[in-house]
Length: 112
Image 1 (cartoon, helix red, strand yellow):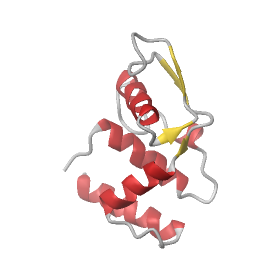
Image 2 (cartoon, rainbow, N blue to C red; image 1 turned 135 degrees about the vertical axis):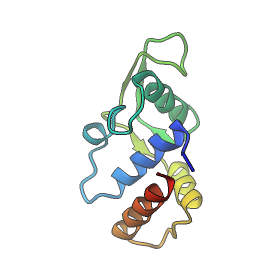
Image 3 (cartoon, one colour; image 1 turned 180 degrees about the vertical axis):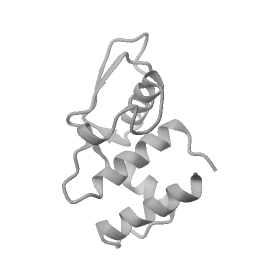
Image 4 (cartoon, one colour; image 1 turned 45 degrees about the horizontal axis):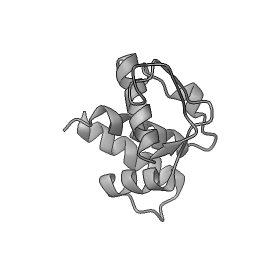
């Protein structure tokens, strides 16, 4: 089972959020999630517009869903994004961050 690009980016942001010292702008980019830059930018724009993440800056492009540049220095995952990932993966919200990170790792291995 493969995750679509938007969910792949959201899961990467969620996984980073679970770290003791998350650093989304340093750890998440089109290369780290193995996507084309424009596909990554479009995924960030969609997640931002749908309320799964916030704080992203979208610049240029032909429309709001296809920005040429995304800046994620202040990007964070919203409670809607957290709930979506946890429901999709069957992660109990009461688990600690280490347990949640392990669950993400196992899910990613299952997805290939």
